[in-house]
Length: 339
Image 1 (cartoon, rainbow, N blue to C red):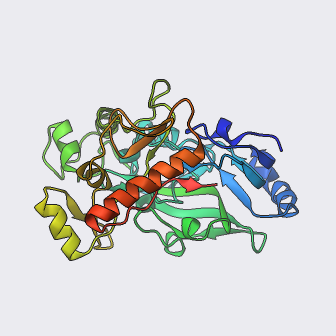
Image 2: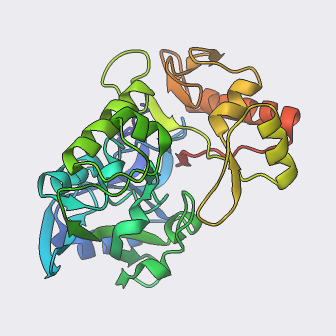
C-alpha cells in the first residue's frame, strides 16, 4: 500500500491504492498495460480526480493516473481541422487552445475541470454543447482483449452524461481523443437563455469565439461552477446529482410548484436536481454530515471540510436523495464516480 487517493482527487478524500502507476509517455502504454494486467483485480484509470469519490479504505487494486499531454492539429478540408489530444491533457487547456487557434466546436465547455480523456466518459456538456458533438474518433485500450481500438462516435453509446465507457467500467481506457472542429472566429449559436442574457445577445446569436468562452467562465464563476483553489468550497467534485428523468405526471407536478423541466436530446423529460434539493428544504452553506456541507454558492455541489470522510460524503448523498424521493417520488442519481 502506498499512494493516497486523497492526494489525487479534488475532494481530497480516499485511502491508499495497492498499486499505483503514473502514465506520462504514450509510447510506454503497452508495457504499462501488460504490467497492470498481471495484477489481480481490475485497473482503475484516474484523470484529474475532479468527478471522483475514493473510499476511505482506498483501492485494493491498481490505479493508473493518466498524465499524458499534447495536442496536435491536422487540416482535413476547407475550414475544418482535426484536433487530437492525449487523455491526460486538462480539458480547460484544450478548450483554451482551440479558442486561441480560432477553432469552434467546444468553446462552451470552458472552465469544466478534469481531463480530455475523462470528458467522453460522462459525455461532458454545458450550455447546450457536449463533447460528443465534436468527437470524430476515440483511441482506447480494451482490457479484455489487450488490444488498442479506434472507436467512432457511433460505437460509444453517448447519451445524457453517459457513454459505453461509463456503462462498462473497467473495460476500456481512453488514450486519446480526436475532435472535428471548424475554423471560425465565431462561436456556435448561443442556445442557453441565461448565457445569452449574460452576453446581452438574442438566443441563436453567434458571438465572437473568445467572447463566448470568456462569458462562459464569467457565468460559471457567478454560479459557483468553477473549482476554487482555496476557501471552504475548494474541496468538491462539482454537481453531485444528475438531472433526473421524470414521467409526464412528475414533470407536471414540478412545473406546478414552479420548478424547471426540459427535454434532453433523447426527448426525455428531466427536472432540475438543484431545484428539487432546494424545494425539499436544502440550501447553500448547509452542514449535512460532519465535514460535509453544501457549497456556499449552490446546493447541488457538496464540499468537504475538516473531519470529512468518503463515508460521510456518501451518507450525505443518500440522505439528500431519500428526502427528494420521499417528497416527490423522483429518484436522484449521484454523478461522482466511485473508486
